[in-house]
Length: 234
Image (cartoon, rainbow, N blue to C red; front, top):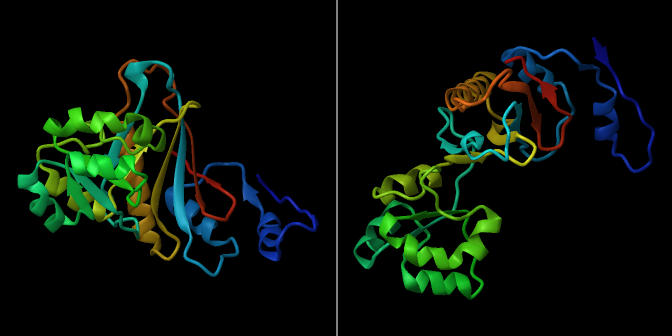
């Protein structure tokens, strides 16, 4: 059953009021229908990012049920990322050739300790983690600490840099058992968004912790940056 929420609150724009007047289905929709429903909302002048969120039947406080990983989407996500690489001097040229905006060891650590944070992903070779550990209090709270689970601690730093610079996306559950991820832009064709969304659903299903009992994916929804959400049947 669809419902419409109306408001005349003066603080809301015409776009927001228009979107609130569009009936919203309480029943989860198929991937294709969910994307069509998302497009029914009045858009903005900029190309909105499309996000997916899943509420999972996991215990976030249990270590073996915590989810963290990274996904390369079949259709990309419409954005690139600034990547840095912690590596020895013999790999600096290789890292920069792969797309790293900065690369190095102790000197790069010192640069970040000095306040430089113009990057979105940090990759490191395993032998550099003893050096990178000094930045735990700086990178950890921002979710930028290199991690083997996310594929950002690896011997093959060149491949990791290329993948993340091209838009590889990291995901992890929050304290409420939710997993958020970007799946593209609103300007993407329907089939591209559908392919990316189906890929994300498949990946989350694949990494289901063995200790999880009962319903694993409790709820799934998609939304653009400035639109209401749409429930997706999983």
